[in-house]
Image: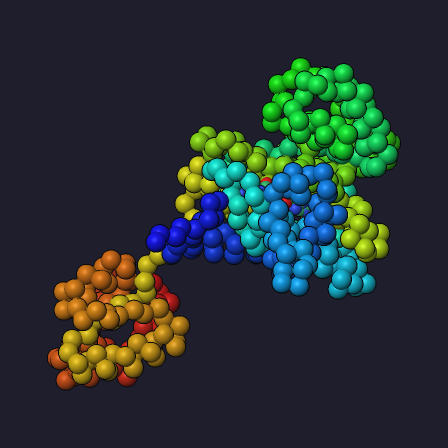
Length: 425
Ligand code: HAM
């Protein structure tokens, strides 16, 4: 019987995994510079968290969650995103009580959505995200947007577009909601089934519909930006002023609607404009979610964040032809000949490894020529040879594969010698 991995999942094999490690390392380092600390939350949560947090009317909750009952009869869900879980943890661990606010967190980990798989859309994907909880300062919005853009730029992406919108506060959205209902109701019968129910539950989501995108009523729909009250308008202006000061380019799109219910004020997406990136152009998305902490049972606490999938990041790097500086070559390959040399080699290899040097050797009983071939295939920078002659003289032959130079080194000097060579290599 042949059992393949489930649809929409992938194995990340050696050769590719180094790219993941590299970008995760760069992202963690960027977070360190912005003073965001890592948080790790469970992969599953009580289903109710996402129903309340992400929102009952969203596609994620209605159609995409991996929900199951455990043996104790509890409804659990594999996390479809990170924000609700981070907020739950912030509340549960009373992190809001710390004097260091805002609380600035980042996470990297697998998320699960039952979506129709296609390039850039997986059922299990890895999100890197950040959340800043406890400040309603528009400068924090700008910091989050800056971190997002900087992450892509530092990794070498150039064809980026930051799309920005304001969803306003509750009052602004209420007024916009009313205008949307009035605008779309005459066409209700012409809209898709999803939009018909969205019109009742969350009319803003109609603007985000892929099926009804070309309906004439879309182009003339009322814009949220015309419904922002004074506070929301000022807030949006402040965010834009900070972005201008930081030299971050953006385009305003009043139809940018996010697929999760918790957003207000700042909402944004970063798109790839690289040729050949594929049908899905969104690299990441985020926004402000004042009110979510209360929804999850905590004290009034504003929040903002964003998330990207590593899969789409790597796709964009490939589309733009960015080569990551990844070292694939082996430091050392140890060639030995004969039983006695093989035993002796095991001790030296062990010592070299303990001193921090990467070493491999043959375990397939290969002859010397075969061992050299292996060293070559692994791109060994140095080949160390211990044969009968060398054993007799208590020496090892060291070949620097990058220069072709060869030297004999005393057995008891080899670790120090190699340490020095590796420093210079
Ligand atoms: P989201 O827009 O649902 O937002 O997802 C954020 C990013 O996750 C997307 O832009 C995309 O890069 C990636 N993503 C989502 N679904 C898939 C998928 N099926 N396959 C591959 N990648 C995917 C959120 O999840 C929010 N929690 C973001 C946020 C954080 N807002 C505030 N804080």
